Picture 1 (spheres, helix red, strand yellow):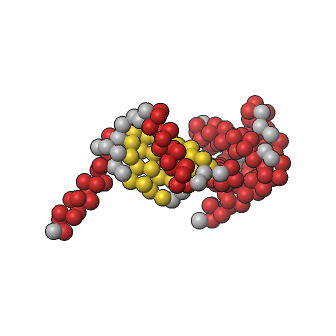
Picture 2: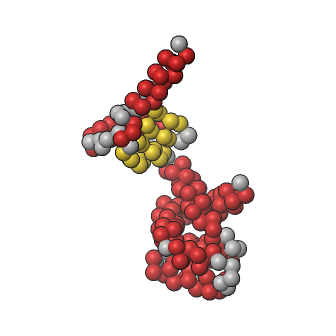
Picture 3: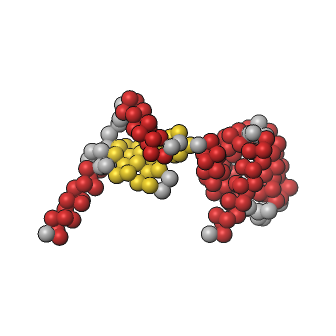
Length: 180
């Protein structure tokens, strides 16, 4: 709970500046790139979150990465602040919450779509348009296949679940038959 509050504070501050200077999309991309690097490199993550390594040493690493990735000075300052305050462990939460804020500002909704089999690009486009009508926002879909669904789809969007899979329908039928 506290971690989420801390992460939200940093995400909101970055978003506030990003909206002021019109670069919130750029900051989101940079934050995602840095977060992805840290999550993918276990040793780097360990070094950046290890309090036994001095803050100047960790900040030197941040400076080098910032230069190599060509990150904006603002994002570099945020990363230096996270190191200084020993809050680098909140990086992935900050990135997640920032993405939510950026999506809201840009009128986007992220959808996790599970299908029993691969869908054609035309079917995905038609589904995206339908979900955009429901959400009133541009839809960004993350598609996964799950053969256990048997058939149909499950879409998760902004706390809502649209379950049209055969597995769920069979479970409901089984429950109805068991009740008599």
